[in-house]
Structures are given as C-alpha cells and as structure tokens.
Amino acid sequence: MQSINLTRLTIGSLVILGLVFWTPVAYFAGAMMIFAGLTNICLLERLFARTFGTTTSCSGAPRGNVADAAQANCSAAGQTNQPATETGCEEPKKERISTQRRELISGERSKGMTLGLVLSTNDPETTFNALRLANFSKAQGDEVTVFLLGKGVELDQTRSEQFDVRGQAEALLRTGGRIAACGTCLRLRGMEGSEVCSLSTMKDMYELLKESDRVVSF
Image (cartoon, rainbow, N blue to C red):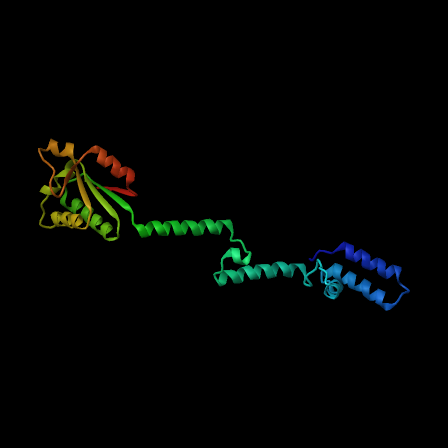
C-alpha cells in the first residue's frame, strides 16, 4: 500500500472546508492536493514548477514506480555490459567478491602450477605411472619435479619389458622436467647421481614441498 502524504492531505482538506462557498477553483485545488497526498502524483506542483521554473519534490509518478524504474535501469545496464560506475548502479558485494575470486583462479590456472612428485618405490608399474603423470602435467604447462627417495633412487636400474620407465624419464627431462635423487639414499646403495637422476639433498626436498602447489607421493 502506498504511503499517504499527510501534509498535502491536511492542506487540501482545509482548503475545501474553509473555502466551501468559494469558486470552483478552490474545490479543484483542494481536490488536487488530496489526490497528490494519496497517490504522490503532484499535477499542480508540476504545473507550477513548469510555469515558474521552480523545482518540485514529486516526480509525477507513484513512489513504487520510481524504485522500479531505477531497478530497471540497473538491469538494463547489466545486459549491455556497462560498468556499474557509469550507470550509478553498484554491483552487490558478494557478486564482486565471487567475480574477483573466479578471475584469480582463472589467472592461476592459465599460468600452470608447480607439481612435486615424491617417488619412494622401485616397482616398475608404479614408477611408470608416476612418470606418466609427470609428463602429462608438463604438457599442460606445469613445472614438474620428481624427487626420488628410498628405493625410488633405483630408477636408473629399473627394467621392465612391459613398462618403459627409462623412456618416460627421458621424455620428462627433454621437456624441461627435473628428476632429483636423495644423496643419502644413493650412498647407502653404493650408487651415485646420473644424467637422469641428479644428486640432491634433504634441503632440496624441503624446498620442493615448500614451493610446490601440489605434492603427490608414490
């Protein structure tokens, strides 16, 4: 229900009661004031404002329609992709945060991630699958490092007719991936670093865990 403007309603009523025996113009003026008080459609005020060049507090439309018109303008601006600052419409805070988060996630994905793989087994099938994942991730534009720990440092000696471990390792190195081997684990086995498995330390593993976006252990 529309609110009633008591000031106009009272003045209009007093004009009619006080000037009951006056000219019909007084009746008309009072009726218009009552009409304006009930509907907020100020016909006389608009007429006087246009005639004398003054301003009026009424727009000539019901109050509810003013809000509806503003909402319609904001909706139209959204459909035309106009910035909120140009239309006077403010984007809801939650929507702004959600949009910023999506843009941030999208930007991070486009840059690729840093993936660390920790391999601690000499099982041919498991090693083969770990290196397959490493090669796939590298193909997506990620930075990939495989850290060999424990039995994993035996990668160079892993042989299998079914699983081409050596081929997967060499493919990873060709595309810019890195394979690092725990130096202590190598020495315990009487082994040294190689072209495929570079000698590394526990500090290198710590840095890998610290700087990687994702770490997967096999």
